[in-house]
Length: 216
Image 1 (tube, rainbow, N blue to C red):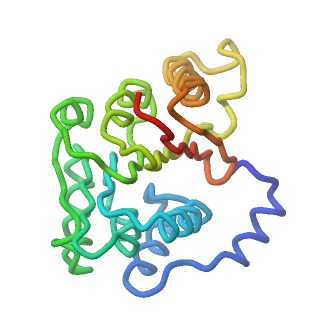
Image 2 (image 1 turned 45 degrees about the horizontal axis):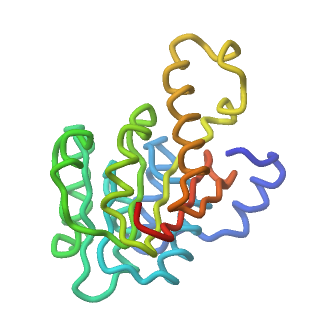
């Protein structure tokens, strides 16, 4: 998280965790350091989706199914979440959790590399949530914008890389420089794209929030 420690501690006390089975998965994941979204990002998504009331959501990066299950609480009747992931270990846990919460009719998993799958999709989505390989965000962006309805929300998680994104390239460890460069390009593009109204929030590990205001 990118805020001061004392603010982090305070907000942990103020912001409630999820309830029921979803809450059990959230608590267990935090305890075991399983990569799911931070709780302040959980609260942000909950507010945004309760306002938006989406019909169809595209999630890129299914992980263990926590965020899919969270977002399923806010879709309209008959709506669906389409989510993509390629990691077998995550997919196995995803299927177990989705079955446990009886969400098979609301959540559809497409197995494979999102960079290969996105070009084949043609359905429009009200919300797109991107939480996949950070070095591929810039490559996925044109497809996300193509698939997003005018008036839709595009949300990308973990865009500030523990604050490293603000550092100069030469101050970044060599093995992280490619991701650093690509993420900077991604943030520049969404911030200067005429079709988007964009805000970059310093909650969690950085969240980019974009509203598509016109067709590209």
